[in-house]
Image (cartoon, rainbow, N blue to C red; front, side, top):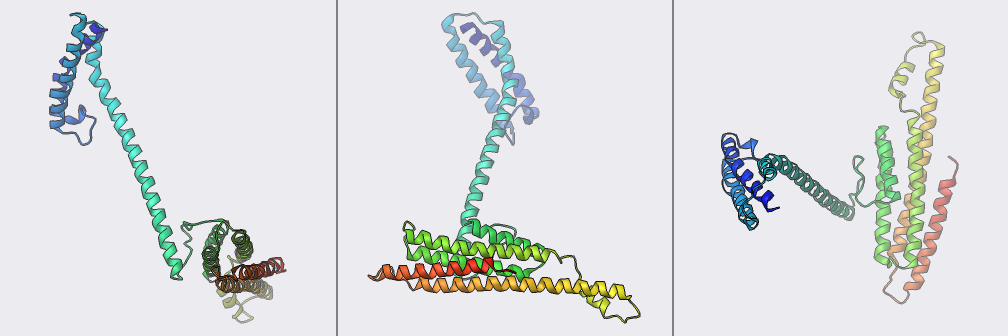
Length: 314
């Protein structure tokens, strides 16, 4: 063992000079660091590696003077093996650091986005972004976001605005419940489940609106009306009947969309009623229990009302 270390020390020491010369000509060939510099070459091959070789040689003298050929060859190969290994290790470290940095930036961005959205809610400016889901999400909020995204993809911002209005009211009622009740109380859980169930009905209605609107997305109403305005001699009776049928389809679809929109308007009114009822609850007074029960009763009626909206025939 001492003979191997002694040979390794000799081989390592002898290889330092040629690597130093090559490094002074082109540091990139002998250094795994980026960017490579000549002072790093001198530090590494004039001081560090010779010092390591000296320590190994002094240590190996305990076994006498008997350097082995295999140790000498291993010493010569140590530097050309160490350079790519160190390069790979440094690249791995950089990749790990970059992943940690990206994760930290993503976490900070998520916290910042959540804070901005919270402030926007407080200012009454809550708007769902179709390119990015909200930071605070549950199945109801994701449903609103997806419905708005689908409606905007169909070029129906007039319908998509309902998702924002429902989303804002849902958050408002949820904030009121959290402010009035302890989240560990059964009252809070029951109330929140009622509100969520009603809002799920509104999500279903928004999705139905997107499905209905998708049926006429390819109809150019302006072109149809323009063709129908032409004189009878310019279009055939068959074409006129086809165009009129197309307009009827559009009118029927718009009527259905208005009915679905009215259903959501009713749900929004019920949410507003609930917000007023919850706001009137004074949990710090002796009559809090009675007021809470009354609010729960209002919420129960509200939920039943919303269920009727959801089951109503279009």
